[in-house]
Image (tube, rainbow, N blue to C red; front, top):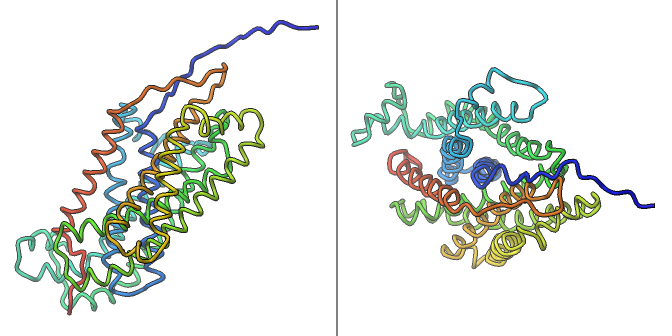
Length: 382
């Protein structure tokens, strides 16, 4: 006996949160992944030649985290709501933890960066030059005596303490991003235990790629000592190895993710179709897989290619594009999955918002180059 079906709700939910929030999630993973790769590499090398790259990998994430609130303001239009979360806190809300984690992460990057630059700032503050006033201001008008190496030895415990604090908050930030999305039980694409590992994979890929791109950019546009450039080429080649294996790890995590979606049920299989044959299929197969995974892996496969500046820059840009579209595909694709009807939720292109993300990225590169002209990134020879 057939029973007629009555649809009580047939609601068009549409995509409530678009590209700007996707950019916001990706930039946070980029900043924290960059710092993790830079600092763990320092723990491996522990040489003064690597110090300029550690400065790049600590101060640039601070700049990124300082600018990402622009995406929230542009998308939500209520910046005051962010501040209310500091005192209207509830322990069951993942966002409540994120407000403190991201803020403390940014502050720890700032303090860690200060201690990394401080020895060279002390030396520069004693020397006559166009930026001596800025250097004296940054050392609070009390430059210490001695060379940079002696000053660094005197502050080593404080510097390493803040390095550990910033590394802790970097890991916590990536964990927060994964838990934030996985807490949405009504979104089968997000509600997965693999989401944390996906953001770790995105962070490792985009972080190593970003370090490669930043260092090549500053060497090309800003005059650096020839000895420093030569010493940093070896580290950049080995960053290419990190990028190569990070891409393999990302592919493995995504494979596990799709296997879990397949066994989740009809909702999980529908979520997988969003990537494979659905409304995000082109963005997934072309930008995320072909451009973001296959191309940089092939370019970083051999040492000779990793040591080529043009090839490594192309691979870095491709890997960053791939992780960006990985975030966008998961974030927007999760909202396109129908909840109360049988059609994909509509999503209209947002070229203006994508352009804003690109403009902010260009601004970050410009700010980095300006700070490179002012701040002492390179070591000062005794």
